[in-house]
Each structure stands twice: as structure tokens, then as C-alpha cells.
Image (cartoon, rainbow, N blue to C red; front, side):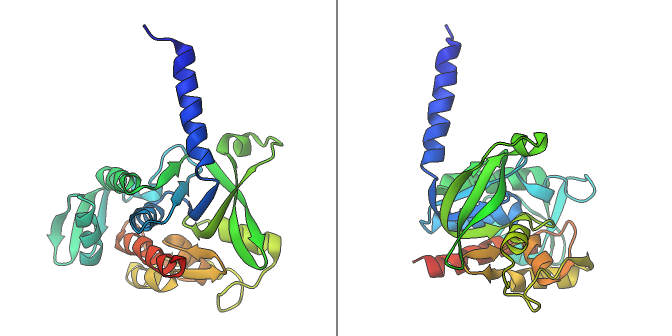
Length: 257
């Protein structure tokens, strides 16, 4: 016999407990694409209290669709090593080019991040930041449905010692900070430099170089890093994205101790 009241009560109680436990975090990751999920895996593995906030129903960002909806992705040798660690199968195509199933990659990274202790909240939009004494100190969240319906519903706040913008091309979090606070970012111009056109070879290298703190307490990873610091896009080659997730976790872990 199934009592729908018990089903509803179980879901509401469990979700509420999970959300309450994440009101204060070590790291809030904004965006559940490959770089954000990999960052969450390594951060949680290092013992930092980490949660990921994704505005869409599905997680995985651009990795789901591979290249133009051919759901295969390419990684280089360095990226393959991380997929190996996460027990995701790869196949050698030719020297230093490896293929992985996009669906398996997303599911595998997500599973390992959650097993490591990270929490993932989908259907949540990060609409603002908490800034205290010239440092990012948290995020302001609301339901994506509220945003889509353009409803006047006040948000809630999550405090975090560090925040990662892993929202990809739109760099939604950094844009909020630039627009609302008129701050000087740690970029050459002090502003968002903007994303350049496709050049995979340069973009893959620059992704790691650009993965860093852009304002006290706020880091950028993945395509957000290149868009913030003015580098190129790379298309369906995901080694740089994956490595960027690990890189930002390493940087934060050093400061977070």
C-alpha cells in the first residue's frame, strides 16, 4: 500500500535537510558542466564542504551533446588520466586523441562527485552574490522556474568561503559582480575581456592558465575562465575543461586549509 502523503513528506523532509546543511559551505560551485563537476569531485575528495548549483533540469553542460549532437567527446592524454581515475571508459582514436561517450562521461563524473561527498542542486539559478569587505562570501539563489516565469519572488542566501563560476560561455556569476558592484577584476583591463572565436589548440592551453581567482573569493573555471580572461573557445574537446576543474580545486584547497 502506498500513501502519497508519506511519499510527499519523505521528499520534503529529505530535501529540506539537504538544503539546510548547505547554507554554509566551503565552496559553492555555480554550474554543473564538466569543469564544475570535476572541481566538485576533487574539492569534496579533499574534505571541503562543496555543493553545485545548476540552473537547468539536466547537469553536464555542453558535454551531453558532444559535438553538434554527436554524443562523443575527445580528450587528450592528460584529460584521459582524469577520466581513468573516475572509471570512465576511453578509446584511443590516434596518438594523443581519445574518445569517450558523452553520456557516460557526464554520469560518471557526477556519480563520483556525489560519492566523494559533493551535493548537486539542479533547477536553481544563482542570481546574485554576497560580497563582504571586498570579498565574495556567498551566492544568492532562486528557483529557475521563478526566473523563467519572471515572478517577483525574493531569493535565499548561501554563504561560502569560495565561489566558482563554472557557468561556461555566459560567465553569469562574474557578470553579476561586474555589473552590480563595479569592481576591478584581476584581468588585464579590470573588466571581463570576452570570449574569442574557435581555436582549440590555444584554448586548451589557455583554459588552465586562466583558471584562477578573478576577484577575492571568486574563481573561474572551464569556459568561464577563457571568457573572463579573453581567450578562445575550443569546441567538443574536453581535456582542458576537465583539467581546469582539477586545477581550480587545487588552488582553492591550498587556500582553504
